[in-house]
Image 1 (cartoon, rainbow, N blue to C red):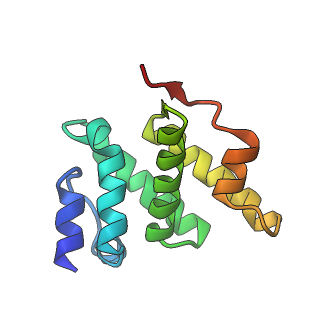
Image 2: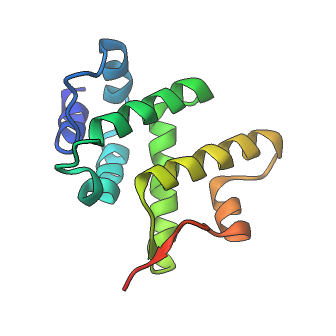
Image 3: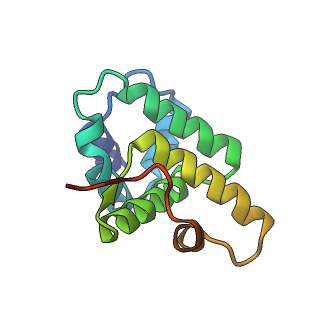
Length: 129
């Protein structure tokens, strides 16, 4: 458990994360946690708003009924898709995309984050120069 929290603490302050949310973070598979942090590290490291972003992500996961690990895994899929298309996006935009895709997927059988990316792309992505 501690290893996963150490992965998250490399990019986020966990000082204001409740014990319940720490347990949720600790339940994320270390590989998923590492991949997620690798995708967002540049944006959140030394960002004074990083803790707020983490708390928003945790709240979105709680509201959706999906685990934080599922949210992070889907976010990683988005970042991987962006990389294959030589694009990037801000974490807030990525989380909004995942939120919309998860909501849509719940309404349509067979629709996944990959389906949304392939069919609709990512409007808020920016080209990597």
